[in-house]
Length: 160
Image (cartoon, rainbow, N blue to C red; front, side, top):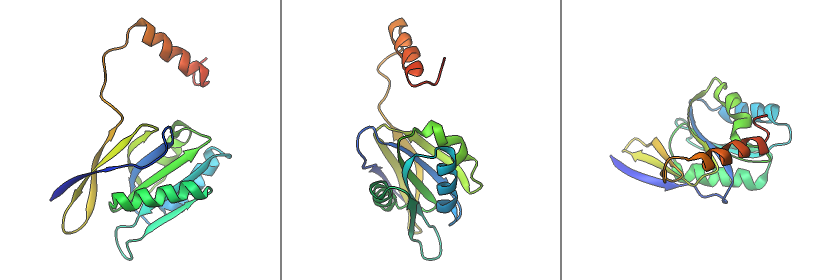
């Protein structure tokens, strides 16, 4: 077995979701729940099929984001993994809907941070072991940092 890391290639601040699923209809089901959850969202989805033709299946409503999803899914190359990129929404806006799709087994990350995917490769194929999402902590928040967090959540409208 060989361990590798695959750096997700994306614009800074671009939000994404990386997960694992188990069936070819994942792409269509993720499309449906995404547009239902946030009507004006722009997104691209790619899914690595793990049997049969073993194609990277894709969908979305934004050509640039679809291409981004396809190229990153191909680089990861792990069976039954999917990746979504989005504009005009945050992962928090669609994450519960995504998790409720019957084919979705797990979510590895939902983030705008830089991401490295830890991949194991054997003769059979590739699998995702986990992700490195962002950077390690630089310390513990103080009162000033707590106030910044509090204000940020209200600025985004997530808290009253």
